Amino acid sequence: MDWAVFVVAAVAVLVGALGVVLSSHPVHSALMLVMTLFGVAVLFIAQQAHFLAAVQVIVYAGAIVVLFLFVIMLLGVDRSENLAREPLKGQRPIALLAGVAVVASIFVLARHAWVSGATAVAGPADGPGSNVEKLADSLFTRYLLMFEMTSVLLVIAVVGAVVLARHSPSGGVRGAEGAE
Amino acid sequence: MSVPGAWYLGLGAMLFTIGAVGLLVRRNVLVMFMCVELMLNAVNLTFVTFARMLNDIGGQVVVFFVLVVAAAEVVVGLAIIVSIFRRRTEATADDVSLLRG
Image 1 (cartoon, each protein chain N blue to C red):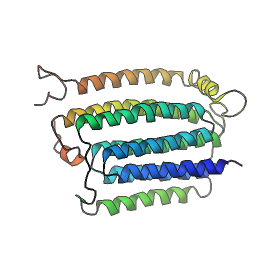
Image 2: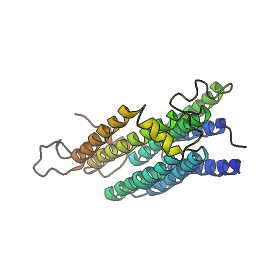
Image 3: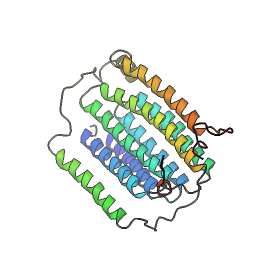
Image 4: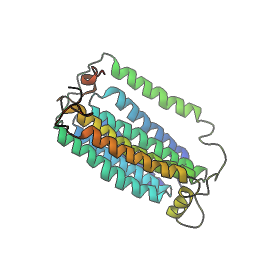
């Protein structure tokens, strides 16, 4: 049963990832991305990361992909791209070679041990209690400062997005028309 | 019997590589951005697998932070893309090669 879930989710992840790269249409790429994200969420659940699976579906598949689709439609770039044309000679074989080299080196380096080190440094992941409980316990004690810093990061991101994306009719203000 | 963590880590490595190769070969900026998301997801999968293999909740906390940073990154990145392509019609990275201060 575990293997069946893993194989199905892994196939969905890989097919979706290849679809993102190989689709000539940006909208198809975005929809293939949803497939990959759902596959990863299933793999999270298979590894008892229930909260992260929920967040993955809500934030990634829900918000981020919709944002991508909004931008694709807003910019009107939802047209196909001719993938047969290769603007830079030899770019694709070299990129493919680099990718194969990365995977091969990871598998060679990990042939003895995939993971080593101390266990349960920030707290055990299994045992009694729900996954959300343990995650929150760690997040609000050991990682509290980092958690508060993410709020600063989100404020900066929101302010930055507003500054970058707004129209400035007067001109001269930082933004899209500022450089004209 | 549950699936060994090595399979998840191998899948994560393959997903990361597909994203990296996609980032190198595609010219559409939005698709390149999606490939970055693929790479982030591969790393997230790896962290969750490490959390399970080492029985450490810290790996899942790191994934939580990666999700927050990814959301912020997408917001700012898409704002930059929108502000660039207000004046240009082609959404390829080659057209932004003249970006100078």
